[in-house]
Image (cartoon, rainbow, N blue to C red; front, side, top):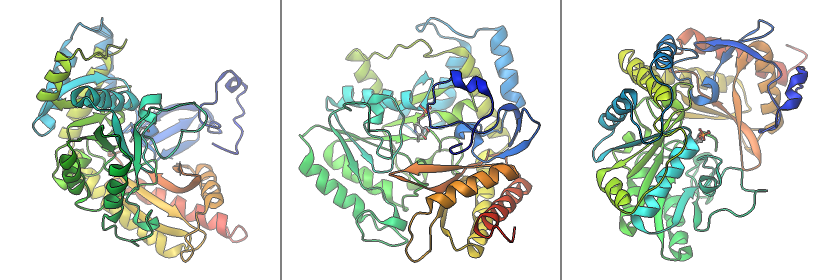
Length: 435
Ligand SMILES: Cc1ncc(COP(=O)(O)O)c(C=O)c1O
């Protein structure tokens, strides 16, 4: 964590890939809890890196991995195995037609990158459009349409990347709405795009809820309008369901809410339940066209059996335990508890979210809405001290929005405990003498 020192001297052998490290070392994890080497238990309201949606170390995932270790872990990339065939079939059945062709990959960046490669090869065009405050991964191709962070310092990005203003009603990017987005930002964005394009508009990529950008929830009907605008231009829709796929928003996929059909979908984090597993899904028509044109994405770990086995266990548990419905119910409970907290704390400017992906934005005061970055850092530290891990997302120079994303298996008692810790932490930071 920024501003805290990790005492373990062995960290000097690590490249610091994200600022600092947490000020403790983890020994084990189970369910919604992690335990440090010093025996401290911490409630993990980030689900690891938003991957452990079944909770940490789910016994069904452990059993699937053990079975794979006995059967087959890794193969030459053109050889298929039972878990890979079974997972592709299961995924194809989960998506609405015509989405029925799957490639099994490793990370979210890779799944989105593959989606864009397929989109470019299929359309023969190269211009890709994303939203400001978006995050799709940190490999250079996909990072070209990451507009929340990570552009400066790495040299040229891909040509033909465009940003449209994100539908962020609390801080309207076109200074038009307040509280409820009426999609003016989208219309303005496409007006600009049409004037900037060199006539090679290929695809639009978006998260159903912008997560790293500050839990920005597009209004109902937003993606229906996106679909119309794309169809008018012959563009493809790519949905990045890295965080939202398989139940987190209280629906199996985030795109379901608007009843639209994407052309390509990237899923990742939540599919492996903590193991590196991702997939790109598309239609037979796009797959056939790209195959005919010589599509190539053969990597060392494409179609690996071991993570596919874990993915099958994740899908089984989600279905058997009704975790999609549970995420919807627990999400409503969490939103209600956080809105009670907001009523008691002036600096909580807005609480927003869907299902179990909730943002809590801190401001200096509700009138000015100035982002309260220092308060965010202090509350994060205080929460750690009191046994709760939550992260503040950093987007466009500010870090003032908590992203709250417990496992879908979280209990109401664990949500109550987290809210209690947040309450006590906010009080301790705002009124140190009274705490
Ligand atoms: C919405 C979204 N897409 C893509 C990615 C990239 O995934 P990965 O880190 O597995 O490459 C992330 C990672 O945080 C993400 O949140």
